[in-house]
Amino acid sequence: MAMSDDSITRKLAAMLGGWLVDGDYNRDLLARMLDNEREIAATNMLDANSVVEDIMFAATRWANASSDSTRNAGRSVFAGIVRDAISGTKWNTANWAFANLHAATTGSDPAIAEAIAATDSQLDGQQFLANAIEAIRSNDADAITRMVTPPNPAVGLAPDNDGRPLAIELWDAIADAEVAANA
Image (cartoon, rainbow, N blue to C red; front, side):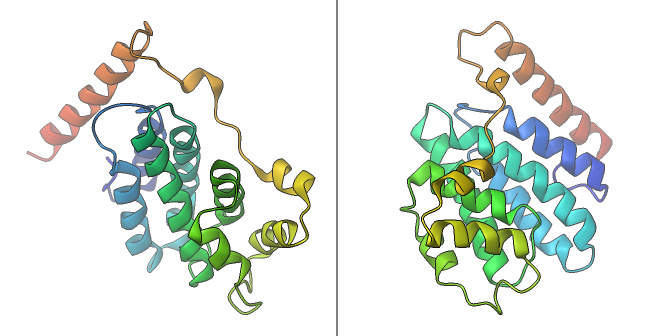
């Protein structure tokens, strides 16, 4: 689903991927989705931006997970979005990725320092990201806190949660359907 030509299908894959919090598999799932959208952005930035929004929201769930590997994977996606933005890929959720990465790492991720050092020309056309960076530069904790995207509290599916098997079963069924459709 994440590699579909259809952006709605890719958005759905990102949304579902966000539910895989604390699983022992697919740690690179969101990063692979982001890589795919980078390629698509070259020819269809509107669709790619729309999908990256859902990847960023899924990363928000991951960045607040209980497992270190899941948290790190979510934070890595935030960092990738931020680095892309200061390198010229104008993701419309880069400001949220920046704010979430700052909150999740208390500003210690190298991508935060890179963004803070970004020039006006690197931030041209990215006013929301520029505003987030300025909030950090000016130590405006209230402004940056308002930009942080809280995870959906219903997403944390503990291993003993009654809904977890159903979520995993749904994900597996979708994967099986994708394989069957491509056979």
